[in-house]
Image 1 (cartoon, rainbow, N blue to C red):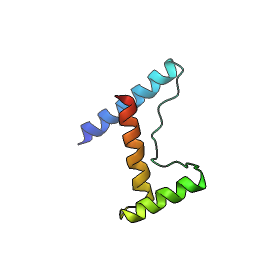
Image 2: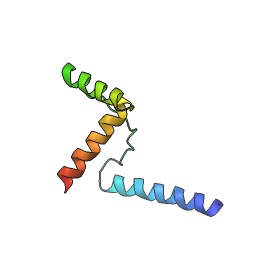
Image 3: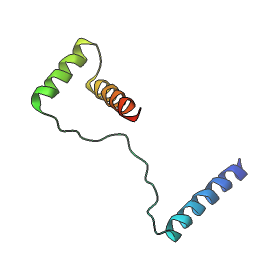
Image 4: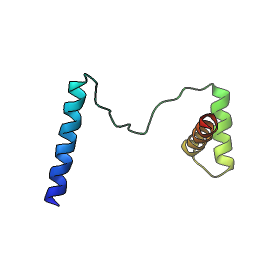
Length: 74
């Protein structure tokens, strides 16, 4: 386990050194949340749809975003 931890730290240090050498900022992890501003009527429709389908609004937005990106990426 100690070797795995050492290898991980070496890999991170190598990545950071490579970023510095190329003068690029290291990738930062996404925290998984962001604010979205939508018109009130769309917010209401989405909230009502979620309630009618026994889901949380977050789940509806996540599903919609996944479907959109899957369609647009194809």
